[in-house]
Amino acid sequence: MTTDLGFWTLQALNALQLSMLLFLLSVGLTVIFGLMHFVNLAHGALYALGAYFAASVAAVWGYWAAFLLAPVAVAGVGVLLYSGFIQRMRKSGPMAQVLVTFGLIFVLLDMTRIIWGDLPLAIEVPAMLGGRLAFLGVEYPTYRLFIIVLGLVVLAGLAFVLGRTQIGAMIRAGVDNDEMAACLGINVERLFFCVFCVGCALAGLAGAVAAPLLSVSPDMGLQILIPTLIVIVIGGLGSLKGAVAGSLIYGFVQTFGAVLAPQLSSVLIYALLAAVLVIKPVGLFPAKG
Amino acid sequence: MFHHTPLRYAALVLLASGALFQAFTAQYFGLEILTEILILAMLVLALDMVAGFGGMVSLCHGALMGVGAYGYAVLSTTAGLTPPVAMAAAVGITAGISWVIGAICSRSHGIYFIMATLAFGQMAYSYVFEAPIFGGDDGLGGIERLDLSAVGIDLNDTRTFALFCLVALAAIYGLAVMVLRSGLGRSFSGVMHNEQRMRALGLTVWRVKADVFGLSGMIAGFAGVLAAQHIMYISPGLMAWTVSGEALVVVILGGLGTLVGPLVGAAVFVVLKHELSSLTTYWHLIVGVILIGVVMSRANGIFGFIEDYFAARSKAAVATPKATEVTKDA
Image 1 (cartoon, each protein chain N blue to C red):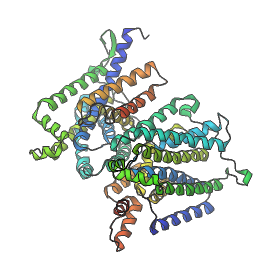
Image 2 (image 1 turned 45 degrees about the vertical axis):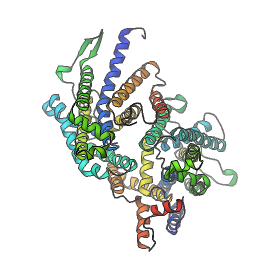
Image 3 (image 1 turned 30 degrees about the horizontal axis):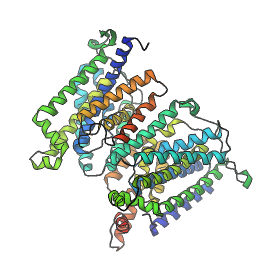
Image 4 (image 1 turned 60 degrees about the vertical axis):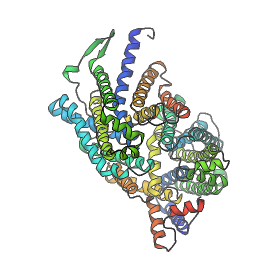
């Protein structure tokens, strides 16, 4: 089987699809950290909320409404979190932030259980994206190809905004040295707030996109949290390049590890993370040297 | 450096007498809860040693406890060692592993340290979850308790086992205090306050961190051995990162860096968990709200709050215990 080219293509597509899903989640988290030095463990819970919103909306108005509304709704929750907790925790150390957001995980997890119940929900793949597509000599589910394309579009969009526009330059300046940026007349606080909302919206989008693939259950946020953290720590906190590199590394190591060395696969990614941290304690592409 | 204040002595006496009273009067269920508190107290004591006195906020202590539990289970059942030998070996293995983790992670700080320890903990968790010799996700059963019938003690009795854990906890508390007061412990606190200065004084910083982390892991491993003996069955769930997260929550609820506080935290946490889960299945929600409230109030946990209150009332020149610690160290 390992000599068949189709097999490698299929696994590479699987890896890419996982990478793109993780990219949507980790890019928000990493930029929030880079800009605000804020560790938001509740990011995974926002992803779960996105999936739940999507499931509820899809049941009434169909998938595409859910696809558009879930990110908006999660960004709304992000606004509440920001004004309620995060603004006040900005100046505290990483330890306090980790703990407050750990508490938020508990709270959000049980809130989803109270509102939507303990049973997993399922949502249908939209008719337009159902079925399979012949691609590079293999049959691949159209919906998974859609996730890959969506991830690439978001990546291109963010790369353009961060690299070529004025607001992107302001964000990069803020990540580099927030005090200096503030001295130059950039309203860093407002910038933080916008970036935080965009990060939350992306988490919601990831949830909405992942919902048809996985069943929507209360602990899905907790399950995705560790992979997301691994991605941003391998990649280096705060940089787009790091989020891309980390997601690709995680997706490919996880997928090919599971196929080629099943007995080692689960340990492999953690061993890789440990190795990266030993060799480069701040990750591969940190925003600051 | 750690030192006892009258308030801390009072709290210890109160806790010890409460535990003793419970151990002699409670029925089966009460004794089970007491034992659970005592084992959790050992784990959080180990965590407070490194997190509160050296700034090493570890998210792998749950997994280290699991290493001790699994080490004991495998050595005493599959390998057929006698319980005392298996206990010593399991504790030794855990200490060794945590020394290595401490040495590797000693260069990382802040969030990177948290992540690195999380990675090691998860590595152990996923290995155990899949490895057949550890029973995989089925866990391991048939674990025996230590046989002390030679001196007329039957640990299979719930009350006796609770008392045994209480004695063990007292001994471990003494050990932790001894370590923190030793030269090693003082250097460790020094490293937390100013790593560069300690290095300039000629200290090998990574060795100090690794040594204390190893000792702390040893205590966590011992807690794991007792946990395995307590329930007589272990599953990989013992090593999940949420266990480490909960241990950290207990340390924070009690009061970081006070050593007495985490003991208070352990008692409050376990009792709260049992009381709330009998009332509602959503007890995590309430624990989450309490946690957020405690952290955002900026008090150093329950015990820290009480200490602050008494410090503010007395006419001492220094207002907070934290300030005392810093000045005494300088």
